[in-house]
Figure (tube, rainbow, N blue to C red):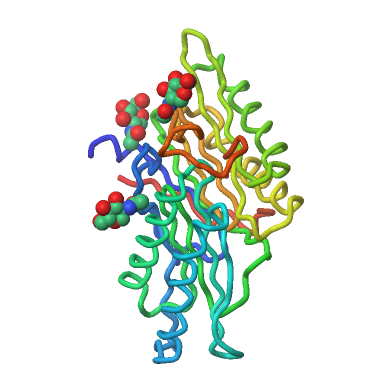
Length: 275
Ligand SMILES: *[C@@H]1O[C@H](CO)[C@@H](O)[C@H](O)[C@H]1NC(C)=O
Ligand SMILES: *[C@@H]1O[C@H](CO)[C@@H](O)[C@H](O)[C@H]1NC(C)=O
Ligand SMILES: *[C@@H]1O[C@H](CO)[C@@H](O)[C@H](O)[C@H]1NC(C)=O
């Protein structure tokens, strides 16, 4: 646990206080909950109609997410009862693990966020979002960066590491799944692994904007570090000194082919150092 006190969480958001993140890296090759946004709204009590629609929505996302290469979005209900939902698995995650992750994140949402109608759940392997407002296809400008403050990289690798990530920022939006990974070989200093991914409801140009803005906004914080992760509403970028994603050809890895892979920001609200 001691190591965690050197982690920083940096929020770029207009809705900062609604987002909760753990002060640790999620990534290993294990799936876990990384963070969530589930605001309680004063005027909202989940009516039976909402609950029934939400259950149908989550059932549909659990069923269909794995069938559509790890991405699905739909809505259930009419007019004021309508709920919009979206799920996306990380691009390297297998169909089975994707389904399991969506199922678990749905259960997590129901148990942790029963009083919210505007929910986002980040797991290592998948992302779940639903709301009574239609957010689908609209680029969201909020991100969270998790950085290991004490883990500075070898200065000779810093600019190559940033180049690796800039390369992903420009090429990931053009990939089939808007997901891409890449490796930097630092010779004796080891390898660095990067990933960029966008949710597939946004356009390729919004994906590029999303990733670009994340890298720009957090560059001074992440630039010199060996381990960091950025989680957004519509895009994600991770960087580590170990391979945190699956090889696509393995049984755990994705089966939907391709090399995979995952803000003009309103405000820099605060830098929170976890002590
Ligand atoms: C989902 O939760 C079950 C029960 O806790 C667990 O066994 C399983 O590994 C989880 N699946 C994923 C993908 O996290
Ligand atoms: C952060 O970096 C330090 C120093 O390199 C390392 O000992 C520690 O395990 C890292 N913490 C986490 C949570 O990865
Ligand atoms: C992926 O493949 C590379 C090269 O074959 C291998 O070195 C690495 O250990 C594999 N990683 C995982 C997570 O399976």
